[in-house]
Each structure stands twice: as C-alpha cells, then as structure tokens.
Image (tube, rainbow over all chains, first blue to last red; front, side, top):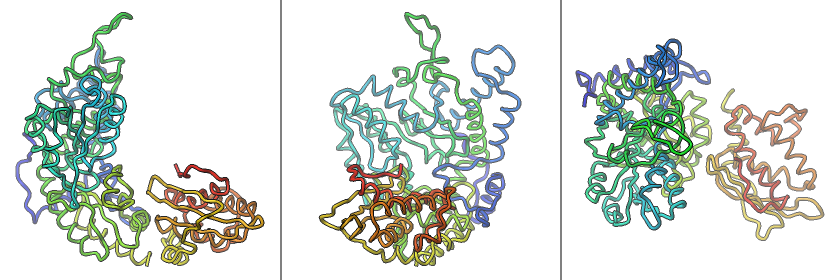
Length: 419
Length: 148
C-alpha cells in the first residue's frame, strides 16, 4: 500500500502536526454563539480541507459536462477527472481493479445495492443473513427488508458490556444456510474496532461472502481490501473529508460479475431495443444514470489529502488524542462511557447522571462545542445499554488537545446549569 | 442568547422535582407521546369532573426541557375546562414556535419560562410533546403521538 507519507510523526510533534492540518480546514476558523468552534462531530460528517473545496470549485468552473460518450473537450475532461478519482480510490484501498470500484450515493446506498442485487440472486426462503448487535441502521434495515421480501432469517452476533462482539457466538452462527455476513469495521455508536480480518477468514473458509461497512474506518486507519480479503467493502466520502452524496462500494470482481443490475437506465447499458437490453461491463453496469461527478472529483481530492498527510499518521495521532480524551472524560464525576472496547477509534459515547444527552448537547453548543446527541442510528445499541440516547464526541484529523480541554470545561458547565 | 434564558431556575427545579409525576389508574383520559428523534417517552393521564380537569399527571423520561414542560403543564391546566385547556394549548404552541400572534408570554404565568426554546429550533419538540399528548388524550386518540 502506498498510504504512508515519508516520515512517521513523533508523539511530541503530533499536536503541532494536527494544528497545521487544522489550518487547511477553513470552516473551523469561526465562532459559534460567541465562542471559538470546537468541532467534535466528525463521525456524523467530517469537514473538508481547502484542497477538496478547491478541486470541486475548479471542476465546476472549468471542466463540467456529462461523463462518458461525449466527444467534446469538456466531456473528456469531466470523464478524465471522474475516472481519475476511481483510480485514486482503487489505490487508496488497494483494490485489484477499477472495475471493482462502484460509485454510489454513500454507505447506505452501497449496502442497499448489495442487499438488493445479491439478495435477489442468492438469498431465498429460510436462508440466513448474519449481522451484529452494534450495526448502524443502514446495515440492519436493508437486510430486514430483504428478509421480509425473500422470507430469509436475520441472525445477530451478540456483544458484551464493553461493546465487543462475541467471536465464538459468530462461529456458531455461521451455518449451512448462511448466505452473507454484513458487519461494521468500526462502530459509529461505540467506537469499537472489530477484528474484521478474523471474521472475514471464518466466513471465507466456509465459502460465505462478507460485506464490511467501513464508513467509520476508512477516514481513520489504513484499509487494504485485498489484505482483509473481504467480498464487499462500503464507505462514504463525507466522513473522510470529501463531499456529501457520494460513496464507494468495493466488490470482489468475481462476485460483482454475478450481480444483476441494481437500477436500470443510462450508462449501465451497451444496447437497448424494446425486446432486449444488453448490459454494460463493470463498473458501469451498476452505475445507472448521470453520477455525482463533482462529488466524485471531491472524493478524489479527499483521497489525495489523506495520502499526503498519511493515513497511518492520522491513525497514530487520533489514537493518542483518544487516549488523552478518554482519561479526561473518565475523570468527570457522574460520567459513564458507553463503549469501552480494548480497540477503539476516536468515538466517545457517554451519558451523565441527571443530565439528558439533549440538554448536554444544547449546553455544549452554547460553549461553541459541537457533539452529537441521540441514538446515532443504532437503536439496538441504546437498548442494549438501557439508555434512551447518548452524547457522542468524535475525533477528526484536525482535533487538538485544546478541543478536548474545552469539551471537558463545557461539561463542567452542564453540571452548573442543571444542578 | 444566554443559556440561562433556556435553563431558567424554574425549569431546572421542575426537572429535578417534577410535579404530578405519577400514574392515574384508572384515568378517564390518557395518551402516550413519543419523540423518536431523542427517545423521549411520556404518558399523560387525566380525570374530568363537571367538565373541568380534576386531576392531571404524567410519567416518562426525557430531557430537562420536556420533563419541566410537562410538569409545568400539569400545574397550569388543573382546574381548567376542556375548551380553556385547548385554548391554552394554542397559546403555548404559538409561544414555543415563535408564531406571529398577540400572545404575550407574560400572560401565561410560569409557562412563560419556556419561551426561550424558540431560539433553539431543535428543542421546540421537547417542550411541545406533553401538550400534543394532552390534546391526544382529550381527543381519545388511541395511537401514540409522535413529534415526527
């Protein structure tokens, strides 16, 4: 993989490293309710660096036309930019071929595509689909809909009080009727980094395809789909410093080739008559209609950004900051962390005694601190921990120790206000 | 806008010690309210006597704004006739949403403490859930009320 930049950062330099990166994000330089913005909601959507904003603007101002088939210059430029981004994404996750990179609207659409097309072809009555207790609704509902349509059965890998999955229970669930496994790489509600390589190996050994939801992983750690050996890997641009409305479905070519089209329309065909349509080759066969071209261009620029700063540097830095933040939060009386797995990404879900998460969120906002509050599209996780909601602070590449110190300070204010 | 405009002492007090926080069983009228966005759930129970609200109580869980709003509501509505209750609901609703009306929050007594939520659009539903649930109870609506 070519994700590493030349020199690894030293721990003592990591604060300066993050501060430099922070300057590349124009949106962070502002006041909210009279206080400097502290943005701790990157797990919901990250911000964009100047280079991504500029790439999208440049494309809109100079190169835009519809992609593919155009013979004029702008169409060629747009196609080059679009397909160039596909190659960047391929390299970033080390896929074998660009025909394995399908552009979709986001992680949600990627999972729906697989549930729909794979489900239509391979899943029937009594077949089983395995997911886990810590999935985002986007990796629950499409499978539930499929189960309802095809009379299949949903099986759920249990988790423990720390927010770690039960591997033995997973092995026991893998059975003769299992047709696919769908698992998140990193939990958006708990921060757990699942040991997915192990889970993939167990499924593949039995010839069962496995999809990984990588929305919360790709921005924060190196991801190599060939090393993971997974069959599908799905992620979103807007959580990895790119624009909204675009995402990636990686699929193993031998499997993608067997999938019926997800949607019909332009771009996904070779020839159409009223009697019969001849479908296009991969990846176009699964990309009907004019795509989100400027979004894909922005995603390409986001990949460039992450390659430049070094995804392994980002990982190391965020782990350091997570350790700092976790111990700071755990020192706050009455605060309880939800999700204490031994391997975590920069997600800190918590509840506080006598303070509802929504009050915490509002009070923090008046201090300029942006965190997410609610069920984080993971209601089964909330039910498991018997909380209606949590407050969640999540880290991005641009967060600093000062951000954490301000969060802690603002949380003291919660106690003052609510008594 | 200062935080204290939203979390006034009276709100904090009613959140910490909600009034009429209990079940009435059996109740002449009752309804359940649910805010799927934040998971707030509450039940509103009431008995009428000679066309007036004789007893009113609530139970449930939610944020400080929703608990305090429900607690204040039970105090404000007790003793009112059904039509007076519905009129007060309209006035409170206008106050919370900042609708262009001639309602002066000062005429609403303690309920005026909730006027601050209009500056926080994401929190208006927290304050209004109990009122929607109260009206649903009076309407004998059997489905749970949701804010969505």
